[in-house]
Image (cartoon, rainbow, N blue to C red; front, side, top):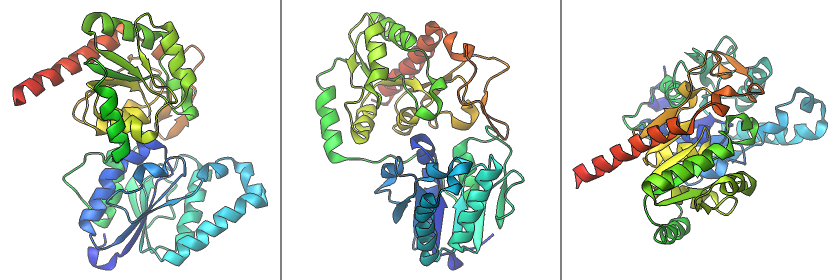
Length: 368
């Protein structure tokens, strides 16, 4: 272990999308509480890095498009090396005392890339998860595989290598004043309860999506039983349009019409969130709204919603999960029939959603 006296500059490497980037915020809080005077930087992809701009636990978010190097042949192109060399020189110039890599070393190529990054920083203390490929780390957290611990817990364990701890393990969310004002105006026009549904997922694994006609049937069932307003959100308008066209009841389709900040502000104000394993699901859990996650191929033990007012709906099949299982990547696109999702009944999701929503209503009434 090391002590706060000899760590002044820390780099956390988290090349992840929205949900995974939110998962690291409790570990960042632990670092900031333990090292209040230290410089703490985060390395993240440009696609998701804006999410943590302004995070009070960080001094700077450094961006690097690691996806360029996700294919082995990318290393053969000299043009791809220039941004990597620039990054290496920049990181070496910053003279970090500690490097934290809260990531699974799933492939040999991935482990090699992190080893090169560790060498580039020159950091004498290098902490991360080790499944047998972490030979370049000085402080190793045993990696029991995906789902042995939630990803938030793994991240906290890596931070603990620097004796960093926190009692507050909630996810941190950004706030944008203009977006908050926009969302406040929007929700005042809609009858409650307001249910936000997210039928999409990241493009890396579209197999995580419950079919659009099921979301449409769920919206119809909710409207018939509880009224209110169903709002569809997604970065792609095609995803929400498929649900809107299949639904018989009116829905508010905001697909492709909101910024990231507006979506976060809107989710903060909803009465219930229902969505696939995706970034917006984790935003909802972080906002402490009743959150229902629909899980199929992906590992709910590793990437389930992190929060008190959350529930997971899934089938119990021996092939689940097939994505991020054990120490392997598995099959991000699942199998062709995907019975884990295509045969997940609307009634099961509705029952869980109603139970979670009613519990939240009772809790609200009790605290008045």
